[in-house]
Length: 81
Image (cartoon, rainbow, N blue to C red):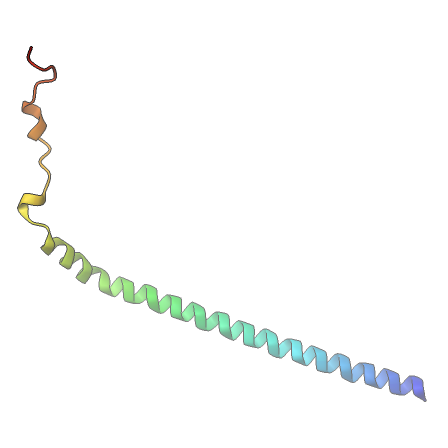
């Protein structure tokens, strides 16, 4: 009879351990899903805010701050002696 009790105890213990593992795996998947949703939300907000950030950056640049690529063509390569 003791052998049957040990088998039943082992069966219940194994089932409880399996159920606990399933619950922990579900919590882990839910956590990863929430983090992925937050990351997707951050990417979406960045895409929505990008045009406004670009407008703010272009308004700060003045005409005097731009570079002129033709400015160095008048300078001699060799210094005058």
